[in-house]
Structure formats: structure tokens, C-alpha cells
Image (cartoon, rainbow, N blue to C red):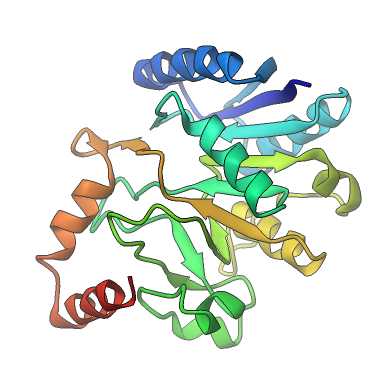
Length: 244
């Protein structure tokens, strides 16, 4: 039986041509591997939390099983969706994220850890002092560049997320909400989903790109930049390597 998927893309201004090109390859490759892309939904010029809520509401009006969230400034390897489904099945989870990197600055992974992930050794990044008083905040995670195994995480960006409709059906609306000074809409969603018992896993295999300064940022940019940062971060990197 084919897995059915709706693609959801909130668009601020435009969809990057490289994003469209990679999406076409992803759709074709997914179809060859038993994954049917039934619909592609977009919004334009809306506040990001409103856009995500509208796309989620539209999705629930269908009988499609999964929704795949893509950002309009990302580059997706053709096997991305296949890999996310592998993790969903292996870990029996209903939400999986890919790993991508910030477009600017030090290009940190858009991936955070907290709580049980920290206790099980998944934390390998910078701590955040607000994490004790703000349940939405975690610590940056620095997955090893050669890491292939999935891991648990606290939160992630919503640029490459596979989500089962069950989570949206049981969560209270609004699913996404921007709380100024507290959290972004993606943290809001993931933390509330986790409080309902759902686990967020990440799959580090797809080499996702984030269109930015390079002009496409990948994990290579992050690890090259990490070597040039301060000693504290370098020490954290060394500790992470020792865990592998």
C-alpha cells in the first residue's frame, strides 16, 4: 500500500528555483519508492504561524496520511522523503526532521536538545541559560559529520519535517504560534506535541541545503566554520567526536 503525502510550503515572497528543481526530483524518486505525493499546498505573504496553521487545516480536510513540510529556500536530495519514512518506521514515530543549517553566522544546525536527549548523550552543542525557565528553549546540537544513525531531539526548524496527521488531530488549535521573546512557531509545535507523548527524531543522512551566503549552506559549511570558532566550541566538538 502506498504512503500518501501532502507537501506544504509556506512562501514569504518566492520559491527559489533550486528548491523547485529539487522538489521535482524528490517527488519522482518518492513515487518510485511507494510514496505518493497527492497534493502540494502553498501560502504567500502570510505570517509564518498563520501560514502553517492554514496549511495544516487544509491538509486535515483531506484523507492524506502524512504532511511533508518544506521551506521555500531549501534544497532537498531526491531521497529525503524516503529516508524520513525509514526513520518513522524504524523508530515508530510520527514526526521526523532532516538536519539543515543556518544561512548566516556560524551556520549552526537548526536542531536543539533538552531533557531526555541530553541525558542520553544526544546533546553536543551550546547550552542556553534560558532553558531552565523556558520550556521551549534547548541547546544547539552538533551531529558528527559522519553520523548516519537517527537520534532524538527537542526541537528543530520546520524546513524539512515529516508529520503524521494523528498529531494534528489530537493537538489543540492553534498548532503553531509565535510567542514574542519566548519561542518561534516551530518550537511551540514540537514542545506541545512532545507533551502529548510524541517523540521527535532526526535523520542526518539527507544532505540538505539552505540557500544563503554560500549560496547553499550545508553541513560542510558548518563544520568548516566550527574549526575557526572559539576554544569552548572547539572543546565541545572534540567531546562530541569522542562519543561516536
